[in-house]
Length: 155
Image (cartoon, rainbow, N blue to C red; front, side, top):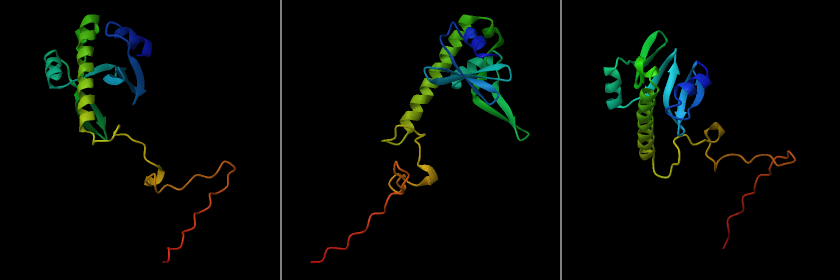
Protein backbone atom coordinates (compact mmCIF):
# COMPACT_ATOMS: atom_id res chain seq x y z
CA UNK A 1 0.00 0.00 0.00
CA UNK A 2 1.40 3.40 -0.91
CA UNK A 3 1.44 6.54 1.24
CA UNK A 4 -1.49 8.15 -0.59
CA UNK A 5 -3.70 5.09 -0.07
CA UNK A 6 -2.79 5.04 3.64
CA UNK A 7 -3.56 8.77 3.94
CA UNK A 8 -6.92 8.22 2.22
CA UNK A 9 -7.79 5.34 4.54
CA UNK A 10 -7.10 7.51 7.62
CA UNK A 11 -8.59 10.73 6.17
CA UNK A 12 -11.47 10.81 8.69
CA UNK A 13 -8.87 10.63 11.48
CA UNK A 14 -6.74 13.47 10.13
CA UNK A 15 -3.32 13.95 8.57
CA UNK A 16 -1.00 10.99 8.87
CA UNK A 17 2.72 10.94 8.16
CA UNK A 18 4.01 7.66 6.79
CA UNK A 19 7.61 6.57 7.33
CA UNK A 20 8.89 3.44 5.65
CA UNK A 21 10.55 0.96 7.98
CA UNK A 22 11.46 -2.73 7.97
CA UNK A 23 9.49 -3.48 4.82
CA UNK A 24 6.38 -1.84 6.27
CA UNK A 25 5.60 1.63 7.55
CA UNK A 26 5.07 3.57 10.75
CA UNK A 27 2.05 5.88 10.88
CA UNK A 28 2.55 9.13 12.78
CA UNK A 29 0.32 11.93 14.07
CA UNK A 30 1.44 14.71 16.40
CA UNK A 31 4.99 13.42 15.86
CA UNK A 32 4.17 10.09 17.53
CA UNK A 33 3.84 6.63 16.01
CA UNK A 34 0.31 5.45 16.71
CA UNK A 35 0.09 2.62 14.18
CA UNK A 36 2.15 0.48 11.87
CA UNK A 37 1.58 -1.30 8.63
CA UNK A 38 3.28 -4.65 8.10
CA UNK A 39 2.50 -7.62 5.91
CA UNK A 40 -0.65 -5.98 4.49
CA UNK A 41 -2.08 -5.48 7.99
CA UNK A 42 -2.52 -2.32 10.04
CA UNK A 43 -1.77 -2.47 13.76
CA UNK A 44 -2.70 0.17 16.34
CA UNK A 45 -0.66 1.10 19.41
CA UNK A 46 -2.66 -0.24 22.34
CA UNK A 47 -2.66 -0.18 26.11
CA UNK A 48 -4.38 -2.95 28.10
CA UNK A 49 -7.88 -1.46 27.70
CA UNK A 50 -7.64 -0.89 23.95
CA UNK A 51 -5.99 -4.29 23.46
CA UNK A 52 -8.90 -5.95 25.27
CA UNK A 53 -11.43 -4.11 23.09
CA UNK A 54 -9.55 -5.02 19.91
CA UNK A 55 -9.19 -8.64 21.00
CA UNK A 56 -12.95 -8.77 21.50
CA UNK A 57 -13.34 -7.67 17.89
CA UNK A 58 -11.11 -10.45 16.57
CA UNK A 59 -7.82 -8.56 16.47
CA UNK A 60 -4.46 -10.18 17.13
CA UNK A 61 -1.22 -8.73 18.47
CA UNK A 62 1.58 -7.85 16.07
CA UNK A 63 4.06 -10.68 15.66
CA UNK A 64 7.07 -11.37 13.49
CA UNK A 65 9.59 -14.15 12.97
CA UNK A 66 13.24 -13.55 13.88
CA UNK A 67 15.84 -16.31 13.62
CA UNK A 68 13.08 -18.90 13.27
CA UNK A 69 11.28 -17.77 16.44
CA UNK A 70 7.91 -16.01 16.43
CA UNK A 71 7.97 -12.91 18.62
CA UNK A 72 4.81 -11.13 19.69
CA UNK A 73 4.52 -7.44 20.57
CA UNK A 74 1.41 -6.90 22.67
CA UNK A 75 1.74 -3.14 22.29
CA UNK A 76 0.28 -3.21 18.76
CA UNK A 77 -2.97 -4.93 17.75
CA UNK A 78 -4.44 -5.46 14.29
CA UNK A 79 -7.22 -3.19 13.07
CA UNK A 80 -10.51 -5.12 12.96
CA UNK A 81 -11.58 -5.93 9.40
CA UNK A 82 -14.90 -4.09 9.72
CA UNK A 83 -13.09 -0.89 10.78
CA UNK A 84 -11.20 -0.85 7.48
CA UNK A 85 -14.57 -0.47 5.74
CA UNK A 86 -15.94 2.14 8.17
CA UNK A 87 -14.00 5.43 8.12
CA UNK A 88 -15.56 6.72 11.36
CA UNK A 89 -14.84 3.48 13.24
CA UNK A 90 -11.24 3.50 12.02
CA UNK A 91 -10.88 7.19 12.98
CA UNK A 92 -12.19 6.49 16.49
CA UNK A 93 -9.77 3.60 16.94
CA UNK A 94 -6.90 5.70 15.57
CA UNK A 95 -7.74 8.48 18.05
CA UNK A 96 -7.61 5.97 20.90
CA UNK A 97 -4.26 4.65 19.63
CA UNK A 98 -2.90 8.20 19.42
CA UNK A 99 -4.06 8.81 23.01
CA UNK A 100 -2.12 5.67 24.03
CA UNK A 101 0.96 6.95 22.17
CA UNK A 102 0.72 10.31 23.98
CA UNK A 103 0.36 8.59 27.36
CA UNK A 104 3.36 6.36 26.67
CA UNK A 105 5.41 9.37 25.57
CA UNK A 106 4.50 11.28 28.75
CA UNK A 107 5.36 8.28 30.94
CA UNK A 108 8.69 7.95 29.15
CA UNK A 109 9.43 11.66 29.69
CA UNK A 110 8.66 11.38 33.42
CA UNK A 111 10.98 8.38 33.72
CA UNK A 112 13.97 10.27 32.29
CA UNK A 113 16.57 11.42 34.81
CA UNK A 114 16.33 15.10 35.79
CA UNK A 115 18.21 17.42 33.47
CA UNK A 116 18.00 15.17 30.44
CA UNK A 117 16.00 16.53 27.57
CA UNK A 118 16.11 13.30 25.63
CA UNK A 119 16.96 9.68 26.21
CA UNK A 120 18.68 9.73 22.80
CA UNK A 121 21.27 12.46 23.36
CA UNK A 122 24.10 12.36 20.88
CA UNK A 123 27.38 11.22 22.37
CA UNK A 124 30.80 12.23 21.05
CA UNK A 125 32.41 9.70 18.74
CA UNK A 126 34.58 7.08 20.38
CA UNK A 127 32.70 7.30 23.65
CA UNK A 128 34.84 10.19 24.88
CA UNK A 129 33.14 12.86 26.89
CA UNK A 130 32.89 16.32 25.40
CA UNK A 131 35.53 17.63 27.86
CA UNK A 132 38.01 14.95 26.84
CA UNK A 133 37.39 15.23 23.10
CA UNK A 134 40.38 16.35 21.05
CA UNK A 135 40.08 19.79 19.44
CA UNK A 136 39.37 19.83 15.72
CA UNK A 137 41.90 20.98 13.15
CA UNK A 138 41.85 24.70 12.35
CA UNK A 139 40.29 26.22 9.26
CA UNK A 140 43.58 26.03 7.37
CA UNK A 141 43.90 22.34 8.19
CA UNK A 142 46.66 22.91 10.75
CA UNK A 143 46.80 20.81 13.85
CA UNK A 144 46.11 22.72 17.03
CA UNK A 145 49.11 23.24 19.24
CA UNK A 146 49.19 21.66 22.67
CA UNK A 147 49.12 23.94 25.68
CA UNK A 148 52.23 23.90 27.80
CA UNK A 149 51.81 23.16 31.45
CA UNK A 150 52.91 26.00 33.64
CA UNK A 151 55.40 25.34 36.38
CA UNK A 152 53.99 25.32 39.90
CA UNK A 153 54.25 28.65 41.66
CA UNK A 154 57.19 28.89 44.00
CA UNK A 155 56.95 30.90 47.01
